[in-house]
Length: 344
Ligand code: KG4
Ligand code: ZN
Image 1 (cartoon, rainbow, N blue to C red):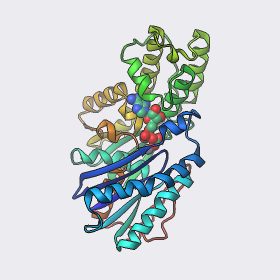
Image 2: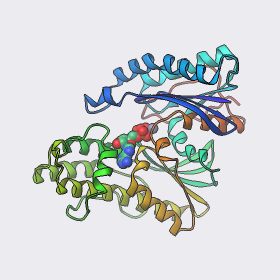
Image 3: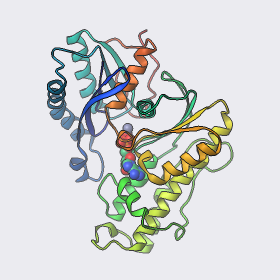
Image 4: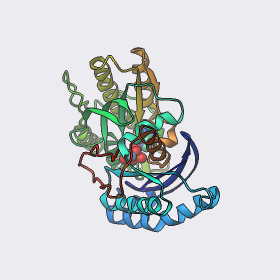
């Protein structure tokens, strides 16, 4: 049994996985705390993790009687993420591993997002992994749970950042992706020509800062600032949301198809991260995978956003491969690559 702990951004979460199956989970979201500021405030996030983690653990321990049946393995998100937030979770995980004499493994939060697809059905290796979250947009060739080769990444903003910052101008609460998606479902694209960046041949990297700037300009010109706060939301707002959805989904599709062509050994496509909950992104990426004869896998929607089930499951997979860490495990802030430094 593996206990997973996630505190890399603004969700405090714990989950239990036994033999690769999710048993139970607890989660406290800080979204409403950060919504007041229109984005995650790192210092506040660390304090909130510190405030909630013990109580959440107590709840899980009570429900699953962990005192008499402690987990054999503790898995923790070690990065990339907000350093102060990660330190809260990693410190807690080390204490549990030490106290129980349990095995210990630090998990790459980004890899865990993609590996979470395996909670629904076994992953078909090798896979092309497309991860789109609030902080990252990455393409990988996934050879095994511990062998991810990065094929591309965003050069500036993540796809989720483009959704969230544009959403803020439109008057949606943070994080805005889900609401933009819902509005787009009743709008139609085509009215605004929004840019798709880095489309030139061969590049597997992404860039969304141009889209973010173009959206700000168009919102200004069309007088759509704060339009989402109007109780009678206009059809122009819905249409604009449909255009953003389409620009991002199409960019994902083009890059994915290019990655598939470059890596014919891939047998499946995995889409994950908060933006994978987007209906159009899911449709476009899923259709592209199937057109190329590849299996399409994505974690169920509630496991696309940050959660601890993905950490527990990834930790369990790594442990199955014989990987683990000592208690000197280092925590990796955003912007630094997570090293391959397994102790075994
Ligand atoms: O993976 P995640 O929970 O956190 C990070 O690790 O960043 O992703 C959060 C991101 C936010 O930017 C949020 O707006 C976006 O995922 N998101 C969506 C949808 N649901 C969440 N974006 C577009 N459409 C959605 N349905
Ligand atoms: Zn995440």
